[in-house]
Length: 130
Image 1: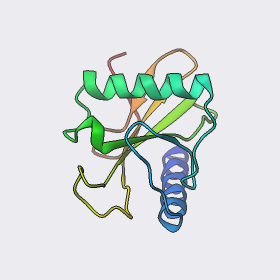
Image 2 (image 1 turned 120 degrees about the vertical axis):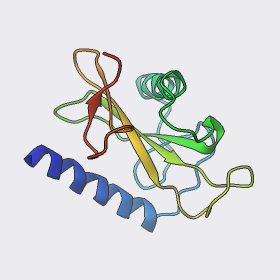
Image 3 (image 1 turned 90 degrees about the horizontal axis):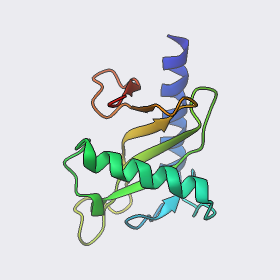
């Protein structure tokens, strides 16, 4: 239960930071917390590319891929990498361009399993096709 509260608190803190920063992601742009462009690290790109493939493969959202921003937020004790998937609002994607709500996350653990909260009713990470 503590882990769930920790994840919720972390998600709320990240959302608050993103809302206070001006984040202007473009489709496929790799960003980190605070809306700054992440360094082009091969490993980060790999996890973001995997997340994009999984979003398509498992139809994790009805939002077109062109209207999604993928944000590598790093790893933690449970996961090697966590990629947040956010709505992107611009001329082609409806919505307030000053807001980029997090839809869900895709996480990769040390045993090469994939987790997501995309279909979770409680917002908890669940195995994805493992």
